[in-house]
Amino acid sequence: MAQDTPLFTVDDDKSELAERACGDAKLLAQVVGSLSGDERRLRQYAASVVHDVSERQPELLKPLAEELADALHRPESQTRWEVLGSFENLVAVDARLVDKALEGAEAALHDEESGVVRLAAFRLMTTYGATTAKRSERVWPLLAEAIRCYHGDAEFPAMLSGVYAMVCGAASDEVKLAAAEIMRFDAENAKGLLKRRASRIVDCAPKKRGKK
Picture 1 (cartoon, rainbow, N blue to C red):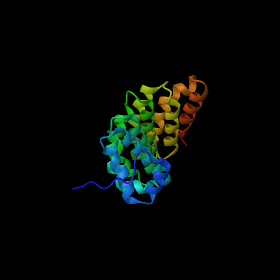
Picture 2 (cartoon, rainbow, N blue to C red):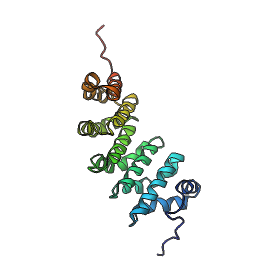
Picture 3 (cartoon, helix red, strand yellow):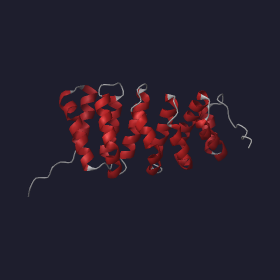
Picture 4 (cartoon, helix red, strand yellow):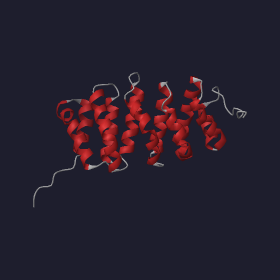
């Protein structure tokens, strides 16, 4: 079967292409399909366009979630962090879509070469975990491990912003307490931004009720 005629090239303006794709399902499907192509440059370009679409009209990507999840297994960092960001934007549309991406996100969370990829995976998991208590408990072991592994990295303060958003959301009391415990040392001993963000997480822990 002959392939469809290409509807875009990597020389097209990304923002303009994203706008066109929002109004053209065939074009959008072709952009997403390019994430599995053989050419690295095209995959990166397509991932950037997809992320732009996810910021404009994320609901359009809902039927393409499985292909997006597959793109998390591409070798280059940019494709993965752009798609992780797209999934983060999809949480508000239907958090169940992220279930397809968790395997790829877990692998990205341990990416040895790119802090940007690790942060994108962490942000996705905290956004997903903020939606229900059950989801928070599902991702918390991975997040707790990442907090221990990447403490002190350049991306760490941004990671804590994600944790704070999760514990302010629908995370379970158990997760809120565990997050407070893991951040207590920094809340009491760190300085500056790290101390402030750690303290906010600790303050979100449920307070024990005294006996009547």
